[in-house]
Every structure is written in C-alpha cells, then in structure tokens.
Image 1: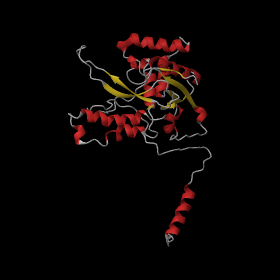
Image 2: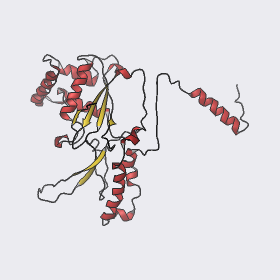
Image 3: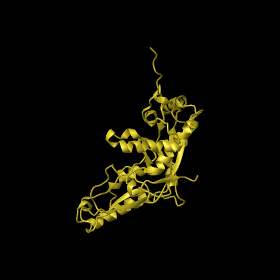
Length: 300
C-alpha cells in the first residue's frame, strides 16, 4: 500500500497545494468567463435580508411611525439609487460553441413599469416599508423574469388552458395564432403540445427551451428601479385610501428573452415572431390590467 509523503513544513504544504491547483485547472478552450467587481451588494439580499436588519423594539412599536418611516427611507434609498452599470459588471459572461443555438428577443418596458414576484412575502406592517415582493436573480442580484414564468405567459394564449365550457375563448385563441402565422389549417393543439410538453421529441434535449429573461440595458442615468403606490379604498369609495408602497422596474428598461428553438410544426423564425407578438399583446408580470408589464420591441 502506497503511503502519502509526509509534509515537513508550511512551505512544502503551499507547494503541494499549488501543484494540485494547477492540476485542477479546467482548459478554457470552449468557455470564456468574466467576473468584475464582486464587492457590489446583491440587490436581492438588500431587499429581503438587509432591509430589516437594525430594527429595534422601539422602532417596532406601533406608536413610532415617524421612526419607522425614517428607518425604511434609508433602506429604500439604497435600493432605488442602484446603478445598473455597477451590477452589470458582476455578471459572469459565458460563451460556448452552442451560443448560435440561442435566439433572443429584446423588449422594453413602458410606463408605468413592470412588477414580477409580488407573491413573495415582503411585509411586516410597519410604516414606510415596501409591501410587495420582487423577483431577483440569486446570483447577479438583478431583477429578472424566470424562464418558467416566460413559458407560462406564452402558453396562456394557447387553447389548452381552457376547458370545454370555455369553447368560445378556445376558438378565439386558435384564430389568434393562425392569423398571426397566416395558416388557417394549422393544428394549434399539436403546436402547443410540441412547444410546451415536448411531444414528438425523442429526448428532453430536443425540446424548445425557455430561459430566464434578464435586464440588458437601461436609460442613460443608469437607474432601473423605482417605487410606486397602490391606493385601495376598500368597500367605501369615499374613504381615504391607505397607500401601499412597492418596488417596480422602471419604464425604458430593456429585457432580453432567451430561447433554444427546435424545428417542428413551425419554423424557428415563426416561433420567435409568434412569441414576440404574444409578449407585446399580453405583457408580463402582475397588474397588467392597469398598465404594468406592457412591452414594446427594442430599437436596438
């Protein structure tokens, strides 16, 4: 049995570790990565963790609303003043031989902006805090639209989400897709099964892939987050509302949607055009019925 060579001193240990690290280096033939400025605070961490650090018993007292507002104003300002260039530099850019398979759609937010992730709890009932959640990418800390949400948004206009009782809506969805693709004979149910369930694919790797959408450009001042208010009146329309502050993504912010398309019932070009039209027509995120989440094609 082979015995390990004993380490005589710290210099020997350093030499050994250095040799092992050299052996473990991965060849960078197909992958190029870049990481810059990892000192920038993660916005998701600031919003969900650091946001409540420092609260004292005195501040939590319901009679200290002025103190609560002052406490959260400092927290809110730190988030709202975030510059995109600071966080863009923390991204890891990975390029491999398969990037030509990835197709993109660039869309820009419009007034009043976009909110995504409102179902995530972010409320203690204290004065001055932002009450609704927002989706942040775990790694970069930037707001994003999860790939599962992108897939769900696109599928929502297909007829499979309607029951037999909703036959009228079902037929309207079929007509919507056929009209855009200029093909009145198209089997829309077959297309839906192929796009969202992988029907007809021999392997999961042969299916269409819906990736996370990320912010890739912002207005010139670099600010991409803002605050807004809901003013619910309750059952009495004459009652003074209790404003609810929340965090949103500002207008004029560009999101890039990423896909891997496979051939099938329609071409890759047709899929991209159809998905872009759906995103324009129905929007993304919460409160689209009052204007949030509406998108237009980027001019870039």
